[in-house]
Image (cartoon, rainbow, N blue to C red; front, top):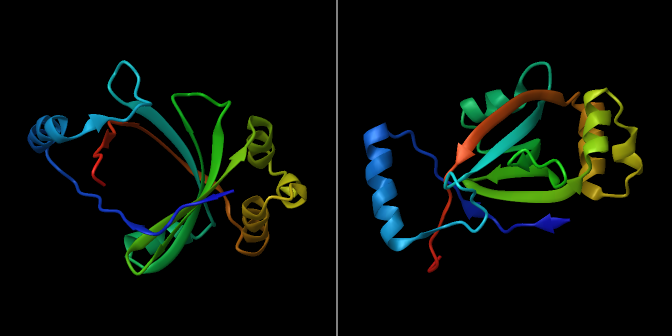
Length: 155
């Protein structure tokens, strides 16, 4: 399991004109991520977990300062490298724990069979299992989008 340090994440809604202007400026100081395809980006598909009351979604909308969410994510329609992720936010700082999950494990989850998470021996999968049992988390929302990622070498 990989654990990332806490970091700031800022998201902004911008106009199409601002997007083109920012993109041109970024090209001068940053380079495209090495994983982009011929479109200059990559496709991301995520399956988010939540309970019947949309607890995770409501906490985000209400700006709750300490929250977490689980998701399954893969890139460019490649299901050979699927990730189970837990994103946490505490006092404006974000972190992410990640572990691999197989296509078969994903299919079991979608069919309502969660026992494999418990017996996997993986702490992140076991935590998701516990929250599926006690918080009634279930696969709820699919988000699919195209990302144009830039890397700024100085940091």
